Amino acid sequence: MEIGVHQILSRKFTIGLILLMMLGNISAQAMDCDDLGLEKEYTLLKKLNRSKNNFKAIILADSLLAIISKNGKSTCKLRFQIEIEKGESFELQSKFEDAMNLYYNLIRDAEPLTYWDMVAKAHISLARIQEFIDRSGDCLHHLKLANTLIQEHRLLNIESYYCVRYSSYLRSINKDSSWLYAQKAVELGRRDTNNKSIADGNLLLGILANEVDTSIFYNKRAIDAYLLDNDYRVAAEVANNIARKLLKVGKINESMEQLAYASQLIEQMPVNDELYYEVLGRIHRIKTTIFEKKNMIDSAYFYLKKSNENEAKSKLIIDKQTVTNNAINFAIEKEQDKLKTSEKIGRILKVSLGVMSVLILALVWAVFSNYYKRNKIAAQNKKINEADQKKAVLLTEIHHRVKNNLQLVIGLMTIYGNKKENHQLKTYFDEISTKINSISIIHDQLSTSGEFEKLDMKVYLENLINNFKNLFTAQNQFLTEYDVQEIHLNIETVLPLGIIFTELISNSLKHSNPGQETSIKVSITRVEEKYVLVYADNGPGYHETHTTKGDKHKLGLSLINNMVRQLQAEHCHYNDNGAVFKMIFQEKTVSKI
Image 1 (cartoon, helix red, strand yellow):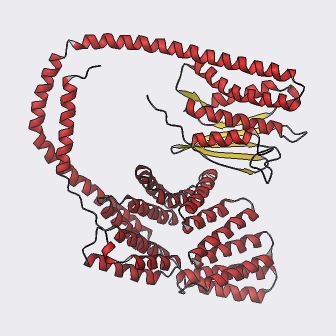
Image 2 (cartoon, one colour; image 1 turned 180 degrees about the horizontal axis):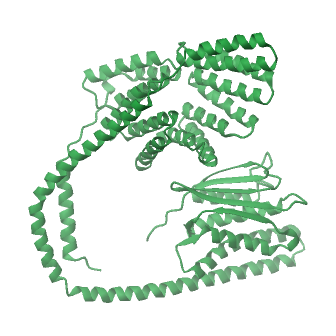
Image 3 (cartoon, one colour; image 1 turned 30 degrees about the vertical axis):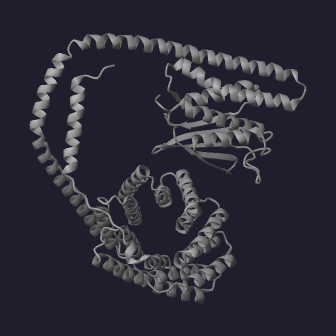
């Protein structure tokens, strides 16, 4: 259709207004510090931080920042990287107010320079502090800001840090999602050769694990990763946690061995600061409990006294009111910046008022000159509506015929399979028929619902499972349990999901426990812009050496892996009173063309 004159003039005015605003906006210019030759010192700073030598790290950071400022390089990126390291040193010394002030100032200075990775890191660090002092709302606020920056600017090297913090935040809210984000943190850490994310991700997996042996397995992986960064304090703390778990299940000797290992690790710390005494106090506290269980009262009293002495040296005092005031002051300064920007825009708008008056006169003329075209446009709209109605009828008929044709194919395959005496071949035809039927159900639902772009997932799953139930006799029925939110997905997403569900249900029925009624549980929940699918049965579970039931070369595994790749999803599986399959996916983007 033709574009009216008033639309063209309106667009030109908008473009002109934007250009005027851009002329009034002068931003700081970024520079580099390569000529200062500080890379070796920055690497040393990171090593001091990882080894928890925080006092020396802060002194070195201040020296480097002074050199950068003296040479007029305050807008170079290295300055902000050093400030991030300095903030972490403040955190490890429990100077949370100083750390938060540093991070707030960093955000304010880095945003005009478009150092988005530094801004995102600062928000993640602020989220870490807020979580530590039990301010979950503020923690989530900073995590959302960090995630927005990561997605908008594709900050791939920050993803693993975000996954660690978001997994930690989700621990008490959604354990399944927390587990998946911890796994993702480990995978991204390996991709980026980031030992800290690998260690923190494994530590979270150990915390989330239900079984003691599984928890200890992940904790030991975390220790190995921490030691690669010479982080003896956290490694000793994790060994201490392993000792506590072993003591809880009655393995006293193994618990003592872990405490001895923790003591060896803590002695390798470069300085005996508050963190040193904090871990040492916890080691002695567990020894007190062990000797109490052994009825060795003198030894128990000795270590209790040592524990109290060490804990007294590591007291942490957090002024939460000061932290709150700092956050409020930061918010006020941001609002003042917005006010200044609004005043600048106001002045620009006043200048533009005269131009707008001229444009209004031109628009009035355009309205009258284009009045006669309205009837023509109305007639065209009527034709378009009639065409849309015809298309809807045609689409309904197409989906109905596709469904009928697929059912015909299924019928032919069933007849052909029944004629074959080879049981394996007949089973093969049946399996293919169920997969074709999952596609047929999609077209049937599209033809009957009148909605051609989205499918109700709960209705689709009910139809799919009812089809399986119709294939079995009353003696071979199975139980189903749904936990599916009101979710509507496009056909491009539902097609691979249907094939995955078909293969999972077929496996559950094929490999069920003899004499036990098969039970299947399905849940689909939405977490931000993604969906979490959990499928579980009460069967014998996955074989140790296979990634799915049966021979790993069968069509089932290949199909599931292909469908997961089509969805660009993440998935995992494990045994928990049966087989459990989990997958995180997003709705596929469909071209409008």
